[in-house]
Length: 76
Image 1: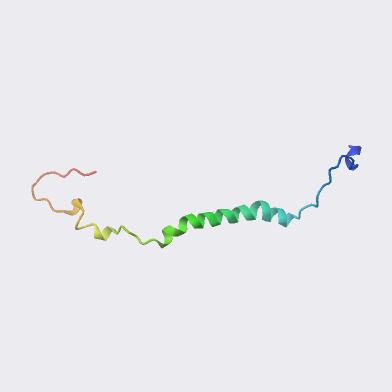
Image 2: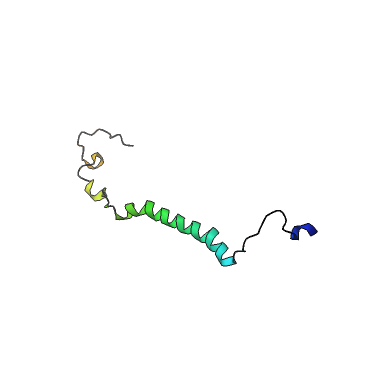
């Protein structure tokens, strides 16, 4: 243990990081990257027009067509 204080093998410890710097580098930056990626993935869907409106399905949908043949309809 006593020899650990002598720097004779070329290793030079760097400057210690402050606590705020550690939190920023190892927590803040990964969270920020995750938020940016999630916004880039989700944002196109936020601005896309809803292409399927259920109010427009009623006249065309076979479930809403009246069938007077007295047959039972098979539906899923």
